[in-house]
Amino acid sequence: MSFYAIIVDFLLVPGKRAEFRHLVDRNARASSRNEAGCRHFDVLESKAEADRVLLYEVYDDEAAFDAHVGSAHYREFERASAPLVSNKSVIRCNLVCEGRLAGN
Image (tube, rainbow, N blue to C red; front, side, top):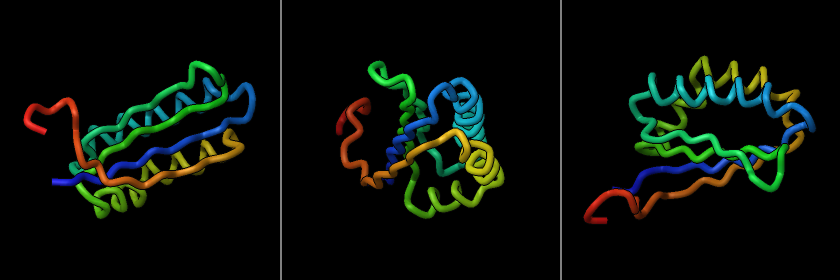
């Protein structure tokens, strides 16, 4: 089975990482805890760039991701974090090999 994965790259307004992390961590936990189709949601900080945060998310399928985007906690995250972000890019992927699982 091929899952649906998202990589989101945020370039933050300088000095806003702590505030952004509070919001994005809350969103990641809510997604993992409350969305049946969310299999994985990681928040990553760049070691080289203090104002860069990335997300790695895995969903059962694109419909599960669409449900995530429609959730109240996601809409609140988008609203609250918008002033903290100077640039955002999204890469949509098919997860074709999950290396941590035996047999893949």
